[in-house]
Image (cartoon, helix red, strand yellow):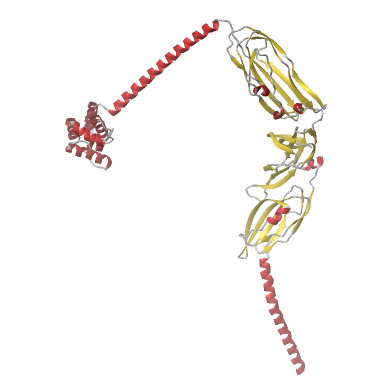
Amino acid sequence: MIRFISRINKTYKMEKIKRTISILILIPALFMFMVQSLHAAVSASVDRTQVADGESLTLTIKLDDMNEQPDLAPLKQDFDVYGTSTSSQTSVINGKSTSDISYIVTLLPKKTGNITIPALTVGSEQTKPLTIAVTKAAQGAHGKQTANVFLDASLSSDSAYVNTPVLYTLKLYYAEPLSNLSMQPLQLANATIEPFGKNSQYQAQQNGKTYNVVEQQFLITASQAGEITIPQSIIQAAVLQNNPNSFFAMQSAKPILVKSNPLTLHVKPIPQNVDINDWLPANSATLKDSWSSDSNELTVGEPVTRTIVLTATGVEAASLPNLTFPHADSVNAYPDKAQSKDYVENNLPAASKVFKVAYIPTEKGVIEFPKIAVHWFDVKSQTMQTAILPAQTFKVLSGKVVTPVQNSAINSASAAQPAKTVIKVVHSKLWMVLAIIFAILWLVTLIVLLMVISKFRSKKVSLTSDKQTSIEKPDINQALKDIKKACDHKDLVAVNHAIVSWGNALFNQSFYSAMDVASVVDDKALKLMLTAINKALYAKGEFVEYSELYQHIKSYKIMSDKDQEVLASFYPK
């Protein structure tokens, strides 16, 4: 029995020792696990794992240190990063404070399919990779019907000739508030694209839903024949959404990416049977003219203005040709600079060019203005056409006077040739008499004008001289009266002003205070009184010798001319 109990005790002791050893082994392991858990606080998550093309998602990275920031460079391969922010929440549980720090990243996928958000480095740690699925956005009418924001692209024509502009129109439809709109530049091969006009904003109905619409037009001009693929236009924006968790009902901005439908433009070469000098491809072209006079009779020496307007659709103003205006030798021509304008007509680019020419007949008779023709290629009928202004004939009556003038060449070809001087002699003495009369009247007017100007200047000089004399040489008697009046009223400020006027008149100098006058008087008693006035005015002194002051000033006499010259050297005029 004793041996049995002894064996039990030994077994119990052995078990106790084993437990103790196990606990000693587990404690360090548990401690290491706790430390590792504390340092493994960095993690990443997304708000959704499936998004449509053009939609954004939010990546949230949990941090254990506010000063640490994750390296986002690995994201740029498959995502556009459209903003980052940091939030921090602090909570107290059972007296212990804990902080939850989040680094929030807004991402827009660059492609469709399964995309992996790679592991991101934060300090000495890394987040785990995440996988999201990006599906293609709904296309066609069904997609537009269900989308709150979509972008539509269209061409004025799906075919065009080389160097002929095509109107490319983008319309952004949105049924919810947007902000921060920006368009990614559209790059085309073998073609140029440039904005055409200003964008317009309006409302439109699409599939029973009211949308706000922003419309912008572009001109695409191909430089060589072939097929041009116009890729999807991409507009970045932010959808404004109410934040239900905000006490102040603030709005949050959710980035989106909207893409238009791709288009194809077929560019045709210039037809072989068309002269390159006559190449003006257009849907239509017209020539119209008007005259400043409705009569078919003109008068020698009297100008008449002709306005010619060339309009065309499907072209730019830069493509419209410069016109030439041939005319008879018996008329002088003075052309104005042509005025061009681009605009849109029936969803096509259109342009106009306005030419104005002033004509002055130089001799009576009959003159004819030849016809004007503009050749253009009709892109609809694939044929050459000609816009014509027929020749016009006018009868020129004898009139006033025609002086020698220089006949200006209107077209660029004749502009390089030497100008031809046309002199017409009119056998009439009336113009000589009129010229002499106008010359005499002009001379009389000039003489009267010079007399008025001279009189005005002399009066102005006289007034200025009188004014300067009154300032430089004030009346000494009036100054003495002012001193007497100021002394009687014991007005120290008035006394100071009156003494300055008296000094200016007596010494012919410019003084500004009684102290200035004291510096030139040779009466010691007067000098002391003037100094006392200055102290009383500016050093809070007291002056009471008003009667004595007036008597000394009244009896003061100007010094000799020799002494005056000595003073003048210190006070130059």
